[in-house]
Length: 375
Image 1 (cartoon, helix red, strand yellow):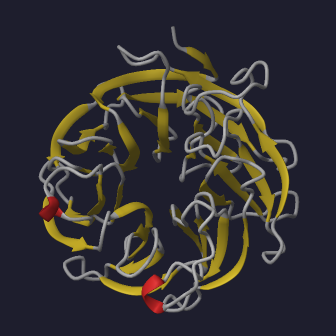
Image 2 (spheres, rainbow, N blue to C red; image 1 turned 135 degrees about the vertical axis):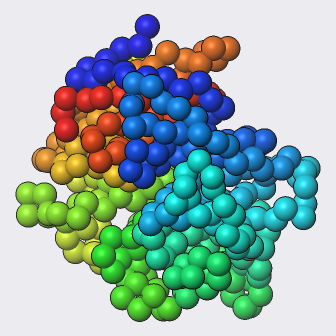
């Protein structure tokens, strides 16, 4: 049976597993992990009775596991899975008009070189993406202008020096994992960029055409988990600027205990300092190395005040209060039952709507709509 604290499940949507959930108004958008289902669009006006409106499919060999919506525009990623499938489909972004959510209309497809786009941020005008690009090793950070959604234009890009192979840059990582931009997130004129086993970077994007690195930190190889998401908190906490940095419990460099989340003091942007960490109690009872996908994955990119919901793989939804960033504390949780046929839950993403309801997607199957009393 599901375990709860300060939470109440309202409904369960039986659907293929996914990578991301996003709510715009009273419409839920679900990005799925595996073809043929790319995106499912659901009416959640009554959160106790969600209604599937339509689905957007993708061909074999590709997935569309991320989705963001703003101002009637939906963007979904197209990223290659494996080596088989419809090669001509190509990696990039699908850009849709969802002014009528039940009738999504493809406006255009923005294509990139190679594998495609992984994660991204979207504010209705600009998309901050992590594509593979011709001439570069691994994913880089890129900014697209969607002022005219039918004609996206690149306005800026940034990469770690050494990635631009075609530019003759010296590659210094022959004995290390290749660099990979994972997830850019914008707050004000800053872009907070996770870079997998190369840590994170804070970029100044006052000039979108010329992103400039302010600082960067890499906790690898001391800690074997890749840096997944950098969530900067807009308002100061205890007089400090704070950033939540989630490591993902996959792709471990060696057998290790489950991944956790960090809290950084970024008051001095040139010298980020880790000030605390958080791990779910009981995720590793004896401190021994554990298989992957037990620990931390992703914080909600929407949150309220100091309350941050998290998707914590096998431990479901965890709700953290970081009012004291030096001592984050758990104030609620929802541990769903594993999907039928699976030993453990695999909570992959969580988001919040304007009503304060939470939407938790399992990587294997299903979405839970959850109410909480802590918001």
